[in-house]
Length: 174
Image (cartoon, rainbow, N blue to C red):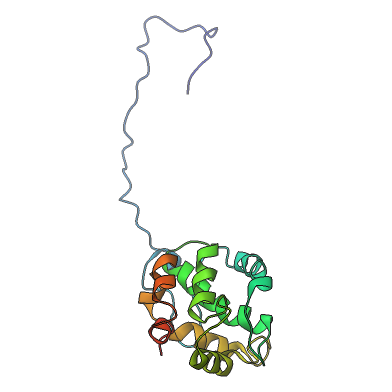
């Protein structure tokens, strides 16, 4: 421990220098379950873990006025169904959700297109109708997120916009 300058020191005592400890601990390893890849449980209804996932709700609300909805669908259905896609994409990168995650989710399902293809409208109505129901819509919302291929999730916004609407089926895993 260092001593203040005003403390007298004996001139015959040598100055204290650093000494290694007798015991040197081993190398630190990430051995807690959350730190090791591949140990997070995966399967039906378990979702995708990532930091600050609640922020996606804030971002999704910014899209509400721009969503292009067909008959039978509500903005809450579109948001709830696409939220899982956005969170899945964010968790692949190990980060919190950003606006691009939701842009991709809404784009591949045609919710940002004023004139989406007719077969997409039919498919999204079947997939999204009633998903906003918190009690009964969880399984359907998970199915929407699980169907999206990883190649779509790893694409940039520009790549998705370039592929939509001509290849919307491959973007949504159909």
